Length: 97
Image 1 (tube, rainbow, N blue to C red):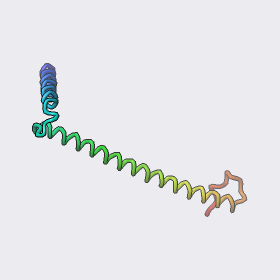
Image 2: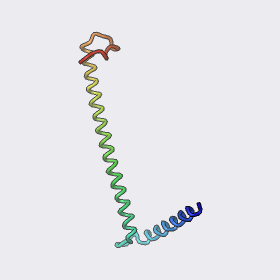
Image 3: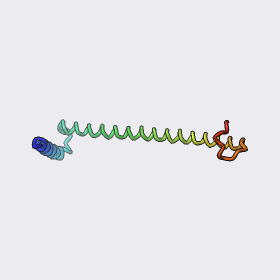
Image 4: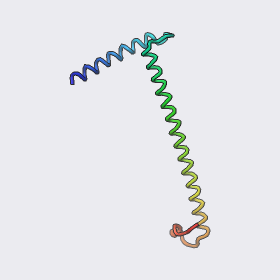
């Protein structure tokens, strides 16, 4: 347990040192290698998140249009079946198109 606390404390101090170093070099035209790596890592994460949201919205829109089409087909079949049938509405499932 003590080793985990020590590792956590070392990581906190290391990240604090990195944050201070990043703040000092924020306007530098040639930032340190680790700062460039973090910058590229964050940019890649943002790009991947954006791509995932685009794909999920496309999938959602495709699913919605598919369901809308199925709903329209079902509505057409029911109206066609009702116009041909002389049965009450509860017998619609027996009507064949």
